[in-house]
Length: 322
Image 1 (cartoon, rainbow, N blue to C red):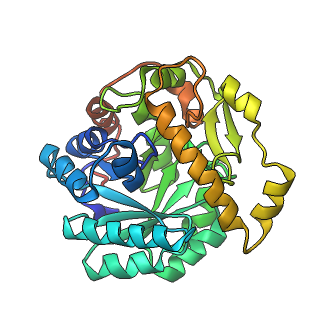
Image 2: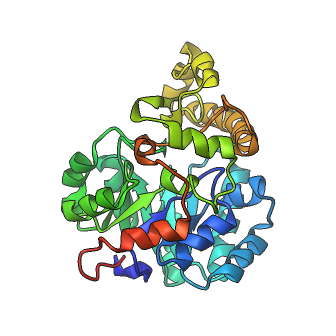
């Protein structure tokens, strides 16, 4: 994965609502790569998208990436995402991670500017669509990931995808240098982490959110369909227990329909955007939606994002780079 031109094959995954500019910049400056989440940058943290990118650039001149959520839930959203991709390219971003849709249009735009595109996948059929669309690599999202998660273990997913001839990044279940090294030894070209980077000084999540991650064990992480219509890993709180983790009968029926699933996911997303933004800064013992993966069980204390990256760099085999 030398295409990304970073020193350490470690990505700070795009997180709504936790990807604030200071966190993105800190990971990149330390030698990994922070990935910008556009809705988080604009809706949660209040930046004009271009100015937000320039603010990050004021803190680091090292490579940063951008996440493009490309599901066509509405025409206006697709137009806005297209605009964000174009602005990112104009501002010098050359690494993109696509999610939840066909990445072909992003690949065409980014390749035309000399950049690269990695695509989030949870199984072979989505990886095949990404390969057909011309992506340069795959973010292999396993069953221990925070946020949207897959259904396969890191090992099973690697074995399923390794024959495609693309670099694979392990996403899910990694919070320690030992786990990082194990993923690289398995054959992954790099690792993407999210949960560990929430419990850092640079992340602007509430102290309650960070402490909930530190206190959580693996059994405290549950998958719910009630946020976006597809499984999302969250910390079990009284609110989540009251809400339940499964879509109701009408919601489930609509999520299975070819024409209705996008509408239903949009309804879920509109509600969850507000709830997640509220939960980011809410100092509460119960929380609303606190996204986290199984790796929370290995997060025992707050740390600097830069120190985490440097600590992980010490277990690199040779001079492996993304």
